[in-house]
Amino acid sequence: MLTNTATRYGALARFFHWAIALLILSDIALGLIGENTPRSADTAAGLQTLYSVHKTIGVAVLGLAVLRILWAILQPKPVPVHPERKAETLLAETIHWMLYGAILIMPLSGWVMHSAETGFAPILWPFGQNLPFVPKSEDVAHMAGAVHGLSALVIYAAVALHVAGALKHALIERDGVLSRMLTGREAGIAGAAHGSVLPPVLAAVLWIAVVAFPFVMPAPERPEGIGAPMEQAQVSSDLPVWAVDQGSLTITVTQMGTPVEGSFANWTAAIAYDEETGTGEVTVNIDTTSLTLGSVTQQAKGPEFFNTETYATAVFTGEISRFDGTSHEAVGALTLVGQEVPVTLVFDLIVEGDTATMTGTATLDRRDFGMGAGYADEGTVGFAVGVATALTATRQ
Ligand code: HEM
Ligand code: HEM
Image 1 (cartoon, rainbow, N blue to C red):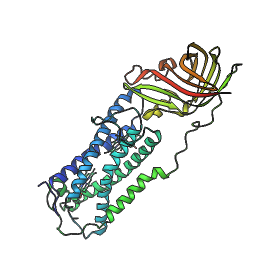
Image 2: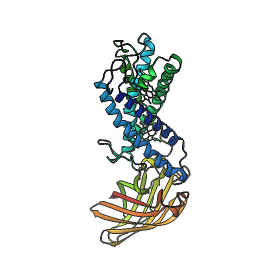
Image 3: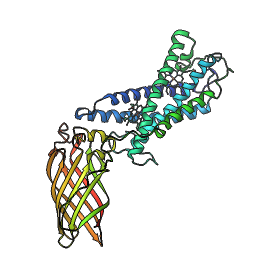
Image 4: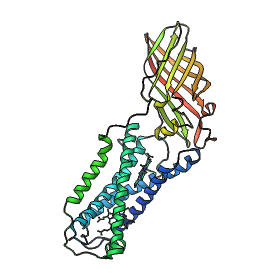
């Protein structure tokens, strides 16, 4: 029979239970393996596949969970088999409600995290990667990740207690509780009372606390260096000096064939430039610890790439010259991870009154800086790194 009665689970409820149980347990295993795999060139491709499968299974759980919950609402809920054991029934039913919450919150928080960050490990379902209303934002991804991680702890405990309970019924009490879910056998007496409204209320309160926790806790201290005032870049020149009012400095890396964009939040530039001759000088100091690069920020800052613990600052100095109308170039050198490499930044510069607007790009080759030596081909991380900058500056 497809439907439930007061004393048995119908085939559809059992299908939902075991399908979701199997998928959830697989996803927990994949999540744990992923979490405990060291990040390196050797593991990058495997980790991408692992997380793609993890996310794809998780999204399937979400779909099944919605159907399951709709079905459960329409169905009679089988009575507790031992209604006289008040505390045990309360515990068992609270855990069931926790698990119902988990099958929504776990995949949703995962999907929000995935949607808010760029790059790495796509979901394999054909209906898009991103959730509506979720902005691309490092902060949102961080919060969703914190909810995902904390909920994982809740689900470990809930599943452990739930399975221990099921085994106790099956092996010690042999009272038909497990076979009620396995084979659809009847157990319990119709008309027995459920554990009141307390179990769903308790589960809801616990879940609200878990989801709210990362929002009410103060954000962890940022690692030293991030956001720290940088040494103001200097140029020694007799030409007019321009102060940067605002600007952005972004990089684009190709990861597994997909462009991932990141940016440096903290940098300063000193610009001397003469409109008449179209010449000048520029120095840019970049706080490499302020880099964010989608889901791979930590790897990018790690010893294999920007090595920000040892090299917290990168410096570009260049000679500016105009070659056509608003087109300019700054020919100079970029010192990054201790390597000084010739770099040319090509940019457009428009001066209106005392305000200058500039947009420019350069392409670097990570191998010139010895970055990602372990990633010898372009399969995981491309060689070319695009740099783009846009700023407005005021004549001093
Ligand atoms: C059934 C649903 C899911 C379960 C039970 C689950 C479970 C887990 C577990 C146990 C971990 C490791 C713990 C941790 O890193 O703190 C994890 C990590 C992760 N999960 Fe899920 N997950 C689910 C769904 C999803 C979905 C739908 C996505 C994305 C679309 C996702 C994305 C991730 C990511 C990116 C990580 C790594 C987080 C990091 O390293 O910071 N998960 N998940
Ligand atoms: C292999 C592990 C599992 C076993 C042996 C197991 C066993 C059972 C049993 C015997 C019941 C029926 C309890 C009763 O009749 O009162 C049940 C119900 C339930 N299980 Fe599991 N379960 C397992 C894994 C899971 C997982 C991973 C989830 C996570 C979503 C889950 C969620 C639920 C829920 C929500 C109910 C309540 C169903 C309802 O009454 O609406 N189970 N489980």
